[in-house]
Image (cartoon, rainbow, N blue to C red; front, side, top):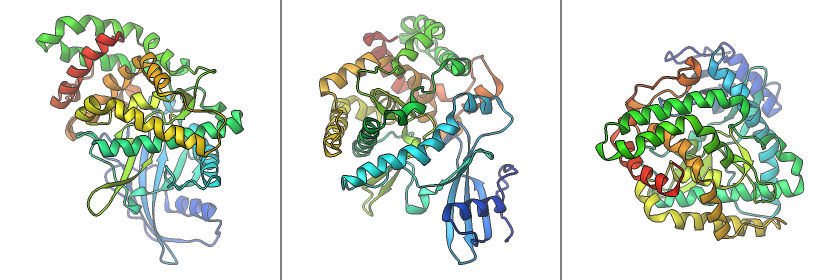
Length: 410
């Protein structure tokens, strides 16, 4: 085997060796003679790109001259973050998605001759003993992330919502044929055994926002008490929004649908051509508005969200309805009015991404904070960071807080 040229940026896990990569590719390709002659392994994420877990990129060359770029996701061992990931079943959930559920969804789409590009990266290998998932590296096919600080424009958002509607519709069709296949996804990340971890993160985030609000004269009096109260009743506010209505319309939600969990390809004229979703560890079988609310309040530009919110919901609904019909699904899409009712009913869920996630999404690269720190250290105090005082987050949250107040969720 060739010499590994590993990144010196960080210490790589002991299991991540050339021998491991060769074993994985031999199993995936069903080729016991496949030999790696050289490899280069490095971190695959920058600051703020990935929050839960470790992600690595491996470039390998085989004895036949083939070059492959691989993504490997693993659990950071020996930390409170590892405990949270295991308590929340994030790793097992993602493996089941790639090995069982997605193949069923794609098979149904292909059976109906629907012209589509798989909405996720190709799965290559998993090893529960090493807590690793190996996927194709989408960057090798020209996919790249959009800049999260700018927010997505209207065309990007429409592309995402059309793909999301197809993803949701395929999951409904699979469930209609085999309800048991969604059993593993009936609890999302908000469950009793993760309550302490999430509470630490959420209350710390509220404290950070509260410290900023107290410096805004026009907001201090109106929102300080409301945010303070939210620290004590956050579980009662957010938890019920994720509960599944057994008689309602349920889909397999991505569960963490924001701009850094999707990658795009572009034409030579820089027009967006396609999107793929990544990071499937928090999928949740429940109301589709979970994904809609999370995406629409984190990822579009503020201008797009303000001007085109209703249009984007209509884009999603139109594709969902049409795809379910093409799939001959017995379950029909809810009406647009019913979908709007669901959005209002579960609106409190927006508090989680708006307070916990949006500051990082809008922060400058140097101002991003490490979300894993709150799990690792069990910190319960106010995080001292620049993300909450960033100019862009201040502009957006000052628009959102009055809306939250007027809608009764704050």
